[in-house]
Image (cartoon, rainbow, N blue to C red; front, side, top):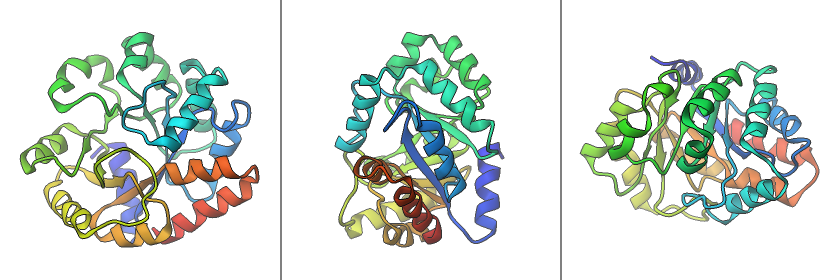
Length: 259
């Protein structure tokens, strides 16, 4: 079992689901991002998924697209992302996961990227635009010290889900709905049916559900079909709406309580 899996396992053994919070690096402010991230970690997030700002984030909806654009506008670079991770990791033992697209990683240089990410304390990677068919060519030996987290979608076949489970480390990221990230008002029965199916097929790894989860009721609804949840857009929306970090922290606490 990998380090991230073991971490999730311990949370599950206390009859809780793991809560992973996604933040776009450098949003809403380049200067106070680390303080905000640490406040969220100290008040309910079990893991942090740090998004690398990118100009064409195809898996992300308007909220995360906006945060990514603002971070780029504020001059947030990959070196800044690594600096953020190093500062956050110096204050917490909780896992840090980087989520980014292939182009910025390739442009930075895979070896350079891996060296910097390892040095900054990152333990897991999510690269949503690297499909299963390109796994071997992209994740060469340079990535051997990272837990590589792959995604399933509602259109993934049973066989593909099983293959993704075998290739994944840490956990399988189960995308709850078709489309991009962002809050949803409702989830129909087809969503639940697919989550049940995917959870029954994932045997090697833990499974976390992401995309669309925005409130405690969503977590309670999905809890029987996962080992944890990922919340991104709803937290970023809060950060955009208010400058009062207490409101954001209270929101994260409410998500944690629902886990």
